[in-house]
Image (cartoon, rainbow, N blue to C red; front, side, top):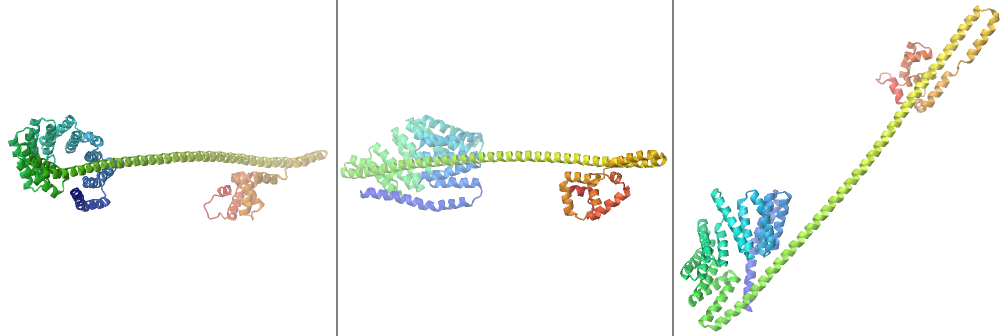
Length: 538
């Protein structure tokens, strides 16, 4: 029980150590995001933040990638959308959610092809191959791995920089599938191609992995001499680069090799060293494998007590690993639940936003309709008022003409009667006396027809038509004489100087003098204001 607690503390310590090392980087990236102005730089920082959480919190890693995806979509950057989806696929693959991993990874393929983003398409094909590999769909995995191989060949043919390819990783994956399918010759072929690529790229870590994998294949084929050569080479490389975790794996591969050929003492040596290194680096999986081998070796050597002790610890580690796997599954389920909740919230938010937009649009349409109705109503009213005004103006103009005609008629009638009477008086002087009485009666009769109140009648009719005009005139100019008021009335009817002179039996000069005096009385002297226009404005 104490030993299992010890292993649990190792796991917690190693995790805490990792978090402490990464905390400064994470804080630095979060601060940087707040200050960068470029959206593309912000997206890159979000990608980097996501990577920092890949080994500790898949849910947190996905949160940053979702933010990067939303930002990429907001600026309509199809390349960054596709690359973000590919990275989301990687997180789901690590979390064991292969359906979502594949769905996201596949979305970038068409865009990378169309834009000839060969390196990204290469990585995308490898990711899709890995996902199919994990769900034991080996043929589909090989299909995408070989597509990646073709892209790598094209890149090299076109003499593009190929340092990013790391083909040895791809060849290792292909070799692993053929190993799982028990097609050992093909497995060795691709492991060997991987070794050549790793040596060219000086990737010593993967070079050791590939040598170990070839050694395992030869062990499976019972060709123990080449198996030992490659397994030992893998260990030597890891010792040279001081890769303790890798050294621990190489030792238990060598342990398994020696157990196959019944050399248990040598197997014991490697199992013990694997356990020591596994404890040193805090690798529970390595310790689990080493404990299993130590149990088997001691059993074969007849050390049953030791075998039993190692078996107890092996079982405790097995339970611990089971719990760890259970925790990983819980984490994956929590991550999926968080993601589903986030998607639901985003959908709800989008629906609310859409509803607000629709409501605002409906309100805007209603406002436009109301304003249009008000405008049309105002326009109709304005038109009606204008027409009424035009009608009144025409009516006033007509009445003005009637007034002018009427006054002219009355004046001329009086003039004619007076003229006839005058002629009769002249005729009376030359006629016989017995005719004087008859002529006098005719003159009296004619004089009775003369309209002595013609001007009063004219003023009365004028006031009926222009009642407000006279009121305004009296308010502004109360000191006008009757003759001046009469002149104002003639001018208001747009009568010319000549017409006024004819009606009033004055000379044109006299009327002009009267107009000049009227301008002075109306305070218009020395101004550009037209007398008739001024009177019309009252």
